[in-house]
Image (cartoon, rainbow, N blue to C red; front, side, top):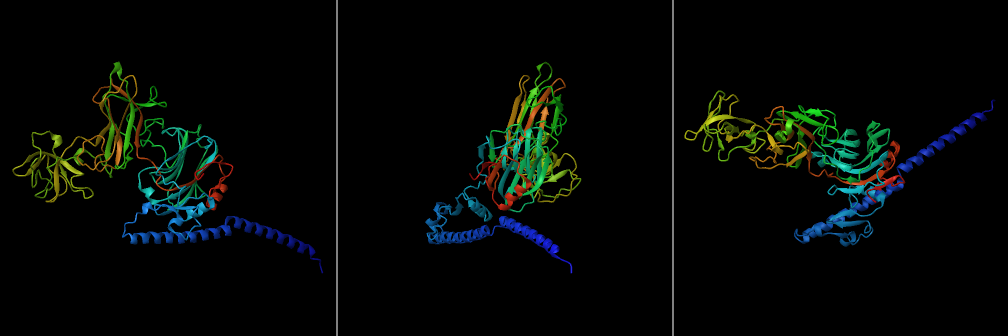
Length: 560
C-alpha cells in the first residue's frame, strides 16, 4: 500500500488557507456590517420613536386643555422640561418650537439621526448662505468635496440652479469649483480656470427623495462626480483652477448669465447674429460685437423664465461711427408664451370699458362683427395701431388677460353696435356670446428695460441695465414688467436705429440673470473638504459607513 502522508499534508495546507480566507471575509464583513453598531442604531431608533410619540401626546393634550389656544412656537427647552420621565437625551436633544432637534456632536449618532430624517442643528436648509474663507481649505491642484444632501421633489419644480457648494472668483466662471442641481434637472459639477476654460460634468437626476452622498474629486488626470459612492460622470485632463477664490459658499452660488455666449466665450458671434465678432476693441476679456448701420435683432436662443422672479438685463455699449457720430440704441427683451409665440401688446393690452360679447356668430368671410355694446371702441379717424379686435377665448387665462386671436378693424358703430373689419374674417367660426374687446398693437413683444432711445459715448463704454419682473396687471405698458403669459424671452437690440452705415456700435458682456437667490432649498449635512483626490474605493467606503470621518486630509467640515 502506498504512503498517502504527502496528500494529507497538502489537504491540511489548503484547509488552513481556506480558513484564513474565510476568517478575513468574516472580519471584513464585521467591519462593514458591525453588529454592535447595528444594535446601537436599533436601540436609538426605538428610543426616538417612543420620544416622538410622547412629544406628540404632550402637544395634543395641551391643545385639548387650551381649546386649541396652545402656542407651539413657545415650546422651547430641554426634553425633560416637557417629558420629565426622559432625561437620557437632555444633553443631546432640545425641543425647538415643538420639534425634536439633535444638538449633539457625536458623528455616529449623527448618522443615525440622518437615517431617521430627524432635525439637526448642524443641518443647513439653505435659508442662509454660509460663506467661509478658502485659505488653507481648498487645494486647487487636487481635492475632494463630499456632502450628504436631502433630495426633495420641491427642488425640481423651480426654474433655478440649486447650489450645494461653490467657490468662484467672479460670475464669468473664473476659478470656479461648484456642485449644483440645474434647472435642466441634472446634477452638475463644474471646475474652471477662466471663463473659456471650463470642465463640467453632469448626470440626469433620477434620485428618489431622501439623503444621498454627493462627492466630487479632481486632480491633473480627472474630474469626477460620485453619487452614493458610485462614479456617475468623469472627464480627463480637467481645467484646474489657477488660483483659489476668496470665499466658499455653502447653499448658494453665482448668479449665472442666462445668455448663451453672452461673454463671447465661444470665440464667435454664436447666438448673437447678425452682429460681427470684433477683436480690435472690447470692454472685457478679448472681444466684442460690432453692428454697422441700422441693425435690429433678437438673440437666437430662447431663455426660459419664471415670471414670478426678478431678472436683470445688462450690457456694455460704445459708439464707434465715423466723425464722432453717436448711435441711437434700444436694448431689452422680447416676450414669448409657452408655445414660443411672440406676445405683442395686441395680445395683452385692451382698452377698459370696451369689454363686450358677440351678439351674432362671426363666420369666415364676414366683414362686419356684431357685439352687444360698441361704446368706447375706436373709430375710423383713430390711428390704425389702436384698432384691434381681441377674442378672449383662451381658457387657460383670465378673461381679457391674454389672447392669441386678434385682428384689425377700421371703424365702430356705437348706434348699431357693429365693428367693421379691415378685411374679411378668415378664421374658424366664433360663436355668439364669445367675449371680445378693443385691443392695441404697438408692434411687438418688446420691453426696453435696458435702454430706450439712448446714445452711447464715443470715448468710454457705457453700461445699460434694468430689472424686469412679473405683475398681475394685464394692461401694463411698463418696460420693467413681463408681458402677461411670458414663459420665454430673447435678448433684443436695435442698434444704430434708423441710421446709415456711417454709424456703428460695439456691444460686450451681454447678461440676463435671475436675481432671485439661488439658495438650495433642501438640507445639507456634513459637507467635508479634503486636500487630496480620494480613491474611488475610499469614496465608496465613506458612503457605506454613512458618516464622513475627519482624517488628516480633511481641511474643512461643516459639522465642526
